[in-house]
Structure formats: structure tokens, C-alpha cells
Length: 127
Image (tube, rainbow, N blue to C red; front, side, top):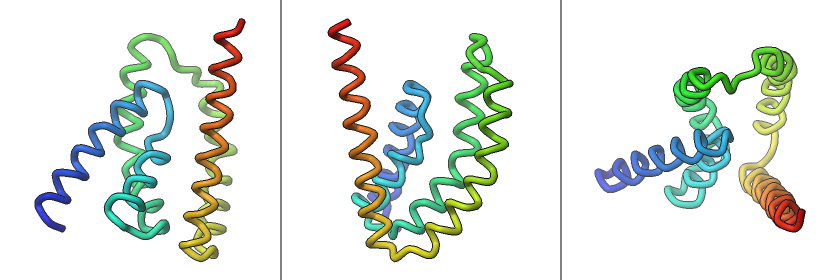
């Protein structure tokens, strides 16, 4: 990895960390897209790397939200129970899909989230 790529990845990590804590989203959506589209990694490598990064960055974000009493342990436990099985199943399925196809499916998923978010934003402005 070149020095320029290292700096680019560090800057992307900083930006993704800010955005994920700001909006309460897993930075994986942003980081996977960055790794595939900007530094030309495969979808599978980007997903695996992103999953590894989620743990420490999520802990830091949770600590900040805990200080302000914005964490529901009950909801977190329920989501975690389902999420553990879902994560295993999703990883197993992803590894069986061709990387190019997986990248396209990921793009459609991101577009759907973007459209839904934009729709809800416009709807709330009208209310």
C-alpha cells in the first residue's frame, strides 16, 4: 500500500467515524463503498475488513451515547440476539455470491436506503 493510499484510508476512516457516530449508522455501508469504489478492493475483502473495524468504532460511539443516556439495553439485546444469527447467515450467503454480483446487489441496497431516507425527509418537511 502506498503512502498516499494509507493517508486516503486514514482520512476515510476519520470521515466514516464522524458520520457513523453522527447519524447512528454502522460505518460499514460507507466504508465498504469506499474500499470497493475508491481503492479498488473486492467486495468480499471490503465486507470482511469493514466487519472487523465495526467493533472498536462502535464501542467508542456507544460510550459517547451512554454518557447522554441514549442507549436502550433492552432493544440492543433483542437486536443482538437476532443479529448474531443474521450475521452468520449473511456472511455465508455473501461468500457464495460472485463478487461482481455482490457489488451490484450492495449498490441496489444503498440506493433503496437513500431513496427511502430522502422520501422520509421530504415527508417530514411537509408535516
